[in-house]
Amino acid sequence: MERVRNCGRRSWLGRGIEGRCDTNTNTQRPRAKKDGERHSARALRGGTGTLTMAQVLTKVPKMANRRVFVVGVGMTKFEKPGRREDFGYPQMVKESVGKALADAKLSYDKIQQATIGYVYGDSTCGQRALYEVGMTGIPMYNVNNNCSTGSTALLLAKNIIAGGQADCVLAVGFEKMERGSLKAKYTDRENPIEKHVYSLANVAELESAPMAPQLFGNAGKEHMAKYGTTPLHLAKIAYKNHLHSTNNPYSQFQEEYTLDQIQASPMVTCHLTKLQCCPTSDGSGAAILASEDFVVSHGLQNQAIEILAMEMATDLPSTFEEESPMKIVGFDMTRTAAQKVFSIAGESPANVDVVELHDCFSANELITYEALGLCGEGEAGKMIDAGDNTYGGKYVINPSGGLISKGHPLGATGLAQCAELCWQLRGEAGKRQVPGAKLALQHNIGLGGAAVVALYRMGFRGNERGIVAAATSAGEEFKSANIFNAIEAALSEDGPKLVNKVKGVYCFQVKGGPDGKEAKWIVDAKNGSGSVTFNGAAKPDVTITMNDNDLVDLMEGKLNPQKAFFQGKLKIKGNMGLAMKLQEFQKDTKQLKAKL
View (cartoon, rainbow, N blue to C red):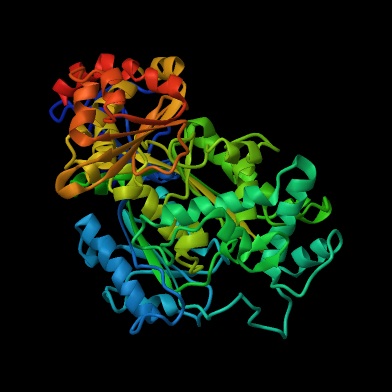
């Protein structure tokens, strides 16, 4: 009888003490578990360390649901269709996959299977694209799920690893698009969203505008009618996303617009102007997923991002039966997938720090806040007005610029979202870094329909100090950078207490840096546990302008604030009472600065 030797060996990597065996006695020592922790599959165990083949086969189903990690990501810059020469889909895939492999420090022969997402193209385009990277005979699965194609390829790759079918899988998405609005490709058969259009026609008067903005625009109109939101809220979302994109080198558009410019841009339909609609784009994104054993054996713990949960939902009867434009475009799909994800992960929307969601139109971002549980139903307008969707607020939503500004190559979008969230959690997002980002939420939706929602966090290491360092590194040449590091540390140690005392958002305009440079820091001591953001976009309650050297002296108690004010060294605009509360930071700054 064939027998299988097993000792259930697993390493201890910061998530509780895993069961491990004594190699001499083959006895199993117990594992100290965390409440609610989801387990990955382990090696099959027997009381004496050996199992018959029959016993192995009966235990195989328990190998499902292994932990899955993202170990490498890469993407191209998203481009206006046709703008970049020599940018066919095989070339863009070679670029994004090459970057992901370099990020993971792996060669292509380590990839055991691949899932490839695209919407526009002939059969087996995935093979044609990946053959430019290598030809190793691996299984390849071509995926098409409308605008959620990229995240669907990612979910398929995750499930392959979770189910024990492979240890290292590549997910890649791409799109080579035509200019202009999306149009149906086949007119001799049923259109996959025709039921959605018929349902909308029952409750709204259709126009000659492209159908996608009509569908989502009417969802925004329904929200306005039910909850009192206004076109200004939609414009504020677009303003935020365009502003975020100015710090993203991968974004198709990297230009800041005023609210007036956004509202005055050409009207498309249903309060949606051109600058509130995502463009068509060329581009590709890629992610390499791995099992826990693969991560450990290849020494990738320091960069591995765990996919805590990832779920897909498709249309429910409410899509067509409730005469609700919001539900026609997937509100209930998103809510269903999100609820499953948070339940599986044992997390709450309130714990999320950074979000990449599907803002194909500003109206969809607005209703998605509520569908994901980031705020209550009907509270999206209040959330926008409070600045709780950007730096300094409760969440930072679409730091990449989102689809509106980054672009939307359909097959690549879900992978680009994954890449951005991995960079954020690893503290590698540069000027757009979200300070203290620990839990990341992804949302990608396609009409027809499918909504994919996922939660991510670092798999093996904490990241608090790394994120803080990354958030302030762009201004480290300033002497006052250490002051803001110290304030960040003070907020990390006792943020709620400081927030309760101060209750304000500060903007520090620092002049007279190296070579005459200027910089800006936003210190939020008003929301959550507080935060410090270099070049943040949050609206301040008070703005303090000082020379770099003078600010250091002021915060270290070497410069009298009243004297500095009358000498013109300290300029204050806004809430003077908040300026007087700077002493709350001064109490801790000198001591904490010495530690940093």
